Image (cartoon, rainbow, N blue to C red; front, side):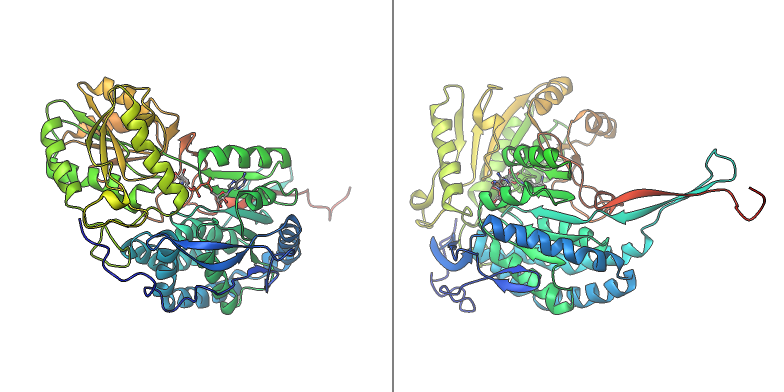
Length: 503
Ligand code: NAD
């Protein structure tokens, strides 16, 4: 453990805590129609900063109307002309990587290492998508009707509403914003109320690069603003990342409006260690699954399944690894975990410490201290990495997404038993297994009911590999080899027989 090392209040001299920020509608910086604002929170200092508008329904309406007006011209702009704009935008993103990384740390308390990686990948991802846009294509087909020809083209959908969470604010927005814009759609973004300012900055840079007014709009505020956007009848698609509970509401709204929808939702990843695993690597994978993003990651490995033959060995090593974790100021690159992102998140995660203490079958293996109880840390919205033994399948620790550095440990004997237990959850986002037996790896990966399966690795990502969940973890995919499939529509065009001859 390590002390919170940098003096509070002096950490972000470049941001004025009293500054007011604006939404961006139709290329203009605007306040909310009724002037209401809310404040951001630096979770390390537990101190408020900035004033951010709370959009009214009328503001959301104006943003959607602006996106609708901008759509025909943007969709009709040649891909080459758009590519020029995206090149300028990605150059600005490179120039502003450090600023965007620091802003996100100020907002959500994730480590500077993680946020620099996330901010640094924005430009590369935009470059890749912008270049790929030139290969969006349809097909020519020979229809069965005599004398006819037919072909398909891919056309943009229209106006997209994008609603994002706080845990990787720009990365999870980029996987919607970039493919939407690159394929000719316009967009209204509702960032999380925890992380609004980094999104506003990203969109300011888009305008600086030459994205025309109305093509990208940002409305800020809490869930009510998200609801106003997702219920808006003039959206062609809603792209949502967030909790499964909110995802259900977004899907209902999209269903009523018959808007297309993609949902990237919660998870409860199973990280399985078989007896023949390479134990040191497996332990590092378990630590990553527990600690990454201070456990505030949809792809956390928050259920750890250990074969009974290696349980004690793995647990001893994992306990030592977690006990040695450096906790502290997320701006200090030597720290592995920072505070939780918000007071609400702190209440939620520490509430589960109480649940663990109350459940008769659950026992604490290590951790469960918070803030002031952690030696050397003694401040802030911190919690200690925590392991709990949860033999009962009904344990809330084992079933619910905690979204903190808390993992539930489960012992198993057979492959069938662990596959059934790993799939015994409403979620289906990610899972992983550690084994040296390739046949087992192939078999088990087929049987795990999740959108992503990692074998002998955890949290591997690449823009050209799809990411998406099954069951309550979502509908659809982001990234992958066809990133535009969910942002374009196939349109069939028919040409009748030659009319130059006799009728
Ligand atoms: P959340 O559902 O509370 O909020 C997400 C967004 O939805 C926020 O912008 C919020 O203001 C908005 N919102 C809230 N109520 C709304 C409503 N009724 N209608 C429309 N929008 C509404 O989630 P969160 O706490 O911001 O994020 C954490 C969750 O996101 C976790 O469950 C995590 O697993 C999930 N997540 C999933 C992925 C993935 O790719 N599958 C990635 C990151 C996070």
